[in-house]
Image 1: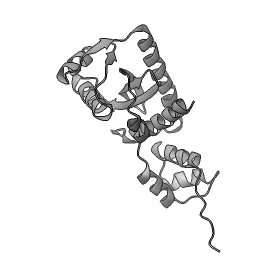
Image 2: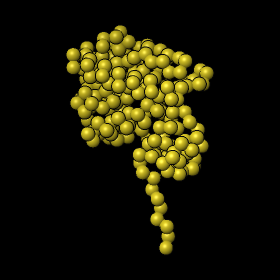
Image 3: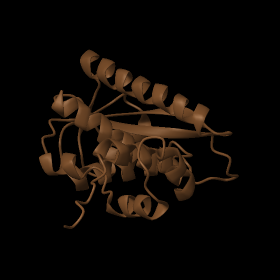
Image 4: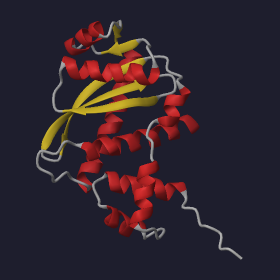
Length: 201
């Protein structure tokens, strides 16, 4: 009789991805995961290859509005801008972008990527000049945050900042001139987890 294949519970796969995207090597991730379930580094590598961020949310396409804002965060020994786009009806995070500059070009690229993923929708910003110019370039109208929109995006950003501070405490970036790709990967996983929790709540 053939032995039944033991499937790894999804919560352990998510935990392994989080450890890896936090900067651990495949072997170190495997060692940390062994406290709960024993899987070798090759299994973890396969999970990483199959991981496709943001797929579920993009299929839903239920977006009433883009609410965008940015904030400055310290990651390791350097500062970076975190651009956040959220959707107020379902209270989900649509996308996060990391950049070392806060410019019209970065804002334009961020908005273009949102349009590509979700289509054109009303856009709300805090009135920063980089947004007004970027919206003009992509031929999109935007309006200033209402009191509700401002409160919602500020709460969302604070929620992200709180988690990022914990991330930096446990997995500080030690690379010189790091391009923060591992941070972007971690944010993708964070968005997926957050949105699934919100949607299924």
